[in-house]
Image (cartoon, rainbow, N blue to C red):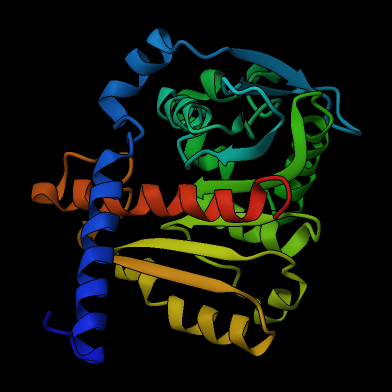
Length: 282
């Protein structure tokens, strides 16, 4: 029998690992794109419901979509933070897909109470973007803290909680990592980090950043963020996907297939990251 050299053995193992990793990525069910989200939510076998989460020092509750996984044990929680467009069917679809993977997904409308007659996203129409910009980092943290307390108190929660956000929500996810020391994990999809490098000293959890290659408005800020996180000894892992643009997870049919390829890589990485840091016993 011919024996392989150590180098050849390593190369063979690396090839097998890459092929198995690729197969794993292909096997993972993806969240819906924007056009398919409403149908997925409507047809989902999982229990989803709207709840009103009390916001301290406010006359208005935070309208929140909660989806439960089908599993026999308690589950980790993921807060799903919407884009600059506010609460949408697409965000509800992402939450549903997280629940399909075993997480309690909690998606708040962070614009709750900011619309006419105390409404949220649905009442703001074309004013959504201008109103959402009125939420300061402290406002966002206050609202997410209320959601966090609600979610961790759910009888079926396992006591661990992470967050994931997209675009404006990605920036908010990073802000939350710098302002909530008990957060267990944060995922940032194509969102900018805080400008003040000193706030990275407060990060208490690992951060995963996922970006499209053709999104230099965001990507040009990554080196400074990486340097600041490294300076303070914080875990910050980034992936930039070839040819993908901003918002690739929502617009999976865009950029001649590059957005879909980015989604096929980013989503399994998101799941693996959350499972590593949020499952009980980790």
